[in-house]
Length: 151
Image (cartoon, rainbow, N blue to C red; front, side):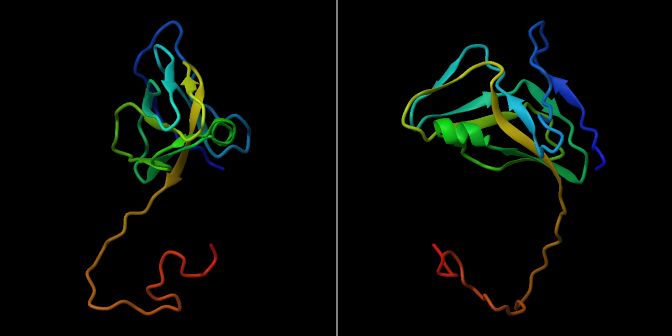
């Protein structure tokens, strides 16, 4: 597998800077994003917060970065992302922030350096949309939500 080079900028360099995101295993699909908060952030049940990561990245043209929940936080605490997966476009240069929500029944505290989300890089294709009078029919047709009867 070929690596894609992604420049990373620390937005608040300091002596206690967090490590750069890294793959935790050789087969991992995503790098872990960490909370770069000055003080702990408490999420009450049903609460949400935009958590900074302290980094900005330069995604190569033809790629996106997807921000995804961490399964352990979801399972143990009910912590997930409201816009999952969130897409970071290749021309965005601002700080990566993670929109966490607490779907659990107890408050959850986000602490500095805690791994809060995954970042997965993926190739993208831009489609050329063309207006059409009709569309080619298919077996499914216009069947939408619940169309297959499996619920």
